[in-house]
Length: 280
Figure: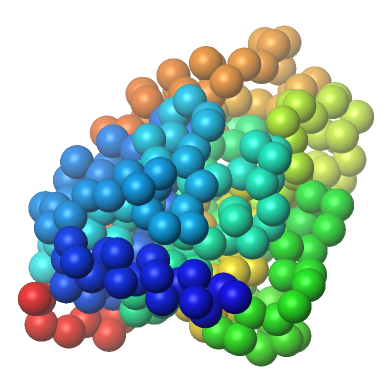
């Protein structure tokens, strides 16, 4: 079923672009401006792509962009899908699986997240070194998608070499760069103070309502992953500010300049680690 769906999606994309991307980006809430840095070959709205679901969350444009950046063929998902929108996990993972089917071997997953450590400030960045799945289930549950193995190794979900490159690129823009564990929750409610305290004790560094399913889908497909949180607020109980999606978008937007410059630098620096083919 999914193979047939992917074939239809790829056929639709092929009519608009023959470019074969090597590096993929998934842009979280309020971080979509980075897509303007790509020299586009094709831009396709999610709602126009066969078997893609339209986005319903503000701050997510919902567009697939194919193009070039720093001499690398790239695919950018400008926005993402979430289970709390009422979608199945297969629907949430489908865009990343499409990247894999397009030939993307390396992907950067970004998100806007709450900080779980008191020393963090809004506007900080955190490079992900692991994930903690608190969504209430495993997104790969069900019939095995035959792009990958039934049992997926999660020993090292994030590639250490590429993560080190991203950290170096971020530090060129700001000294406030952390490393930590991303805690993925279902949402759409923000976490209670008790939950934030609990996630902190479990070793969490940031918390959000996305990314974990995409990490599993990407690992299932054999992709190398780099993860990045833009810390848009501190978790409930760590600050006196009440949380809102508007605040998340606003802080992410203020960080977009540094975010974009870091990812441009990262793309140039990481090129030797990619299986880069001649641009077409």
